[in-house]
Each structure stands twice: as C-alpha cells, then as structure tokens.
Image (cartoon, one colour):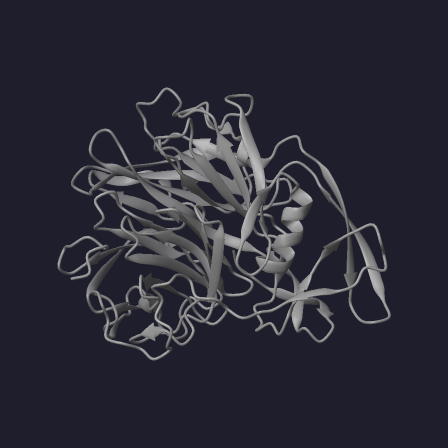
Amino acid sequence: MKSTSTLVTIVAAAAVVYSADAKKDKDVETVEPVEPVEVVEVVKTEDVDAKLVTSPTYWPTYSPTVIEDDEPSTPKGFLGNELIDVPELGIRLDSSLTATQIAKAGQQVQLKDGNSNLRWHNWMDGASAIALPNGGHVYVSNSEADNGKGGVYGLYFDKKGQPYDYKQLLSGTTWNCSGGKTPWNTWVSCEEHSQGQCWEIDPNPSSEHHDSPQQTVLGGKGKTIHMPYVFRFDLDSKLSISFLRADGGKYEAVAVQDSKDSDGPTFFVTEDRSNGALRRVETSCRGWNALKVGGCPSKTTYLRFLNNQRFEWTSDEALGRQSASKYYPNTEGITFHNGKLTFVSKAWHVIYSLDVNTMTWARERTGRGKLIGEGSFLGQPDGVISGYNQRYMYFTEEDEKGNGMYARDEWGKYYTVFEAISGQFVGDETVGLSVSPDGKTMYAGYQEIGVLFAIKRKDDKEWERYR
C-alpha cells in the first residue's frame, strides 16, 4: 500500500500524530511513525469530562533470548554478508543469494511451455506458496487494485519448480491486501477498505471448491457497533467522536493456531486502522465449512492489553478497539508459531509477541541498532512470515525513500536480504513474501512496478538452515 501522509491532528505534547493514508482514493487511517514520548489512550466513556490517560513507552524485549545490547555481533547464520548490486533487477542482494525476476505487471508470464495468456496482475500484494497434490505448488498473489478490479491470482509450479500455468482465482473484489493460508491449504484473501471482507479460495484445480470462492466469517459480516469516544487534545478543549463500524473492515493479514486437540483451528486477523482491534476467531470444525458464513459455529473475540505485560481476549469489540488505539495501532503482518502470536504495527515500527499460554506480551522496535552487515531497516514493517522452525522471521517494508526485505534471527538481530539500489523503487513497497513448500525459494517483489523475484541460496539449502 503506497502512502502519502497528510497531517490531521497533533495530540498535546505527546508527539503522537494522526494522519490520513491514501493510495489513489483509498482513505486508510494510520499513525505517523514518530518516536512516541507517551501514548494517548482513546477512552471509551459517556463522560465528556474524561481525563487523558497515558501509558509508558519503554520497549520490552521480544523474547527472553533477545540480545540486549545494540552492538552488532558475528552473524549466526548465512545472512549478514556484503550486499552485491544486481542492476538488472534494481536491487542490492546479500552475496549468499541469487535472485531472478519471474513476473512483471502488464507482461505475460514465461511458462515452461510458452507464455501465459493472462498478463501479470497490477498492484500485487500479500501472497503464499501452497503445496499441491501433484507435488508442485501454487504461488497465490493478491491484487490491491481498486473499484472491483482486485482479486487473487495463481502462478502454478510443477514438482521441479518450473511454472506451467497462471490464472485468476478470485475477481470482483477491491484492495485485496494480504491474508493467510489455512491448515487445509486454501488461501484467505482480505480486502482493505471500510466494508472489506475476507474471502477463501481453494487454488487446487482438482478440488470441488476450486471455482467457488466464498466469503468467510473472519470479516465480521452482520455486526454493527456504536462507540462514543473522547479525545482530550489539551487542558481546555475536548472533542467527542462517535464511531460507527458497518459490516467489514480494513483487514490485512491472517495467522492460524492449529492444534490436534481442538475441534477446529483459531484464526487471527489484523486491521489497518488506528483503532483496528486484532480479532481472534475460534472455529468448531475443519475444512471448507470452518470459515463459511452460516457454516460451522465460531466465536469471535478481540485483543485487549491489560497493561504492559498481560493481555486478554474480550467479546467487547469496543474494548478491543480502545486497546488498539493505545497499544497497537495499524497492525499489518501476523504469524503464529510454537505458542507465539507475532504481528507488527507499521505506524510505530514495532513488532509484538504474544505468548498465548502465559497470556503475556512484549514488543520491540524493528531493525534499529541491531542490523548485521549492510543495509538499513528504517521503514515501516509490513508483511511478516516465520520460518518453519522460527530461526528467522522475514519482513517486507514500506518506505518513501526505498524499500527492502529483511530477516530477524532468534537472537534479535536483523539482516538485509535485499534492498533497492539508491534511486530505484522510490516510494514503492516490498510485497508478496512467501517461501516455497520445499523451503528453498523465497518469493518477494515490489508492488507499484509489479515485479516478482524468486530468491535462492547459492548453496541450494533451505532458508531455515543456518549454514
């Protein structure tokens, strides 16, 4: 999502800036990524004389294994080397890697038996590489185009990694931002506008549901709430704002917690609003009916931070939105692994880690003071995925000056995978982050230019192997 920011309000001396964020005519609320002095809580109350509530803004560590000092140390894995210019791609790439451009917006895709009939879609965004029964995989990719021109597309690879088909899987939707893969290998694509919904697509051509995408319960269809808030901007003036949430929302990404002991998996959905409450949807079955509107029963609750250490899930959406305003505005990428729910606030350049077993949480600034080797991760974190054994998490970036893709290891150090050569991809953003099922190919690219890269290690090992 390309950003152009317009100043709306400055809240007292706290230096928290609210702004309007737009791509084309898309009005997305966000919070400017400034270094906060204190965070202003949006207080739900019927009393217009309510006082301003603030919270400390120290940044707890992400996990007990994070290195506390800011001095770079010797890289533990294969990243952290010098960056090599690849001028034909417009990027600087870690010297342990190779990259190939495999698609570009407006151009036919080169398949193993010729070119595709369909041209690569515009405004590519969230994506996932999903295994297929034939031993190959499909790279499903959202289109964040507007006015019903968005949707989902699939680039199909055989078991040798050769592309053989490219086609559209969902049409007629708007601003499909990101989403997530389900345990039954379908893709959930989320729209990011005020009435947005989350759609489930089965990319397997042999499936009975392949040609029948469905709306899911993740979008909150049929629920409308009224929430009176009070903002106190200084000691003498107050402004009361009523907020009406109609069906749907500006949804971003989806993560899944799956357990063999449960009747169905639990889904987590982020929303890119300054008060976008992270939602948890507990399902009661598996497969195509689990997320279907009118299918198996489900329960939706919302993330509420109780203080700077503990959290709960509440059925009160207003409380969830209040907590988002104070603690976690404008959430984007999200991932779940080994009992930890991890997501990012692009507005504050913060990564959050929730331990769902102990109901505790921690946070840290992304990138700053911890980058090993060359490059700079100073833009807004956007997409995030975790490797299968959590040795690395991978991030895409949104930044007006240039963008890249970065990794964070289990010790809390960051590495540049690739970033734009100076003067290239200015004002663009990196998108489409995913890893092939065999763990050897990383997919990522740039949204506005519309290029997709396939990135591999020179030693032909999986991305999660350190050496």
